[in-house]
Image (cartoon, rainbow, N blue to C red; front, side, top):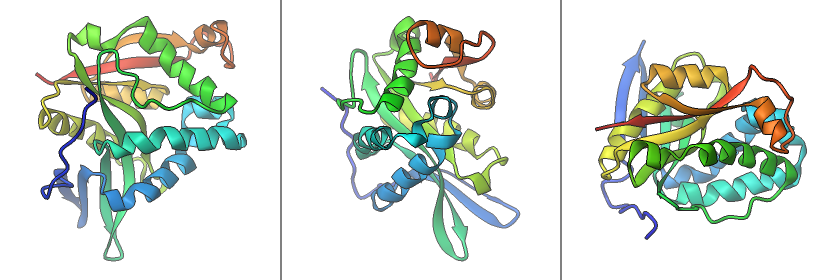
Length: 233
């Protein structure tokens, strides 16, 4: 049976909060009232900034942009995504998020058709490394917290806010009886950040590997995407 979160009066739950130089920050469940804003942030930043999307020129293909959005909608609706807020001019503002979903071994969630040539090129690259090495079997865990997009708004980068979102996966997961997480990290900066947060690389594919598999990527042998995992128990 697909995972279904019990979203009750205790939600959205806060997983971390801190203050830096008088600035307040909080990592919590993404508030449902911010779902549309979250989608806008994802599309604005990932379509151009994320490595595979940039290489695929996804931002030039309207069908692919719409396809990504339709993919993320049911992911966000599972209500396991993490959001980072701060206060700007006295108003709580969404500045970063990580789209997370719980999947069991063999799940195909979300069951959404991947539409758009550029989006297919990105999605099949992510799929490529998970087919090479199944994170569920590697960790010997039936359920894992998967993630499909971590973004920090450009004005807030350089403060290790991405690390705060990665670290918050642990209390979120443990609260729901899940003992591990997995993500395909596509660029060297995100891979380095994940490693610093305790993630282990279990499989990688060079851009040339992706090109040789029939995908539209430069045939470079020294640049990689990496499937990384972290166990919590």
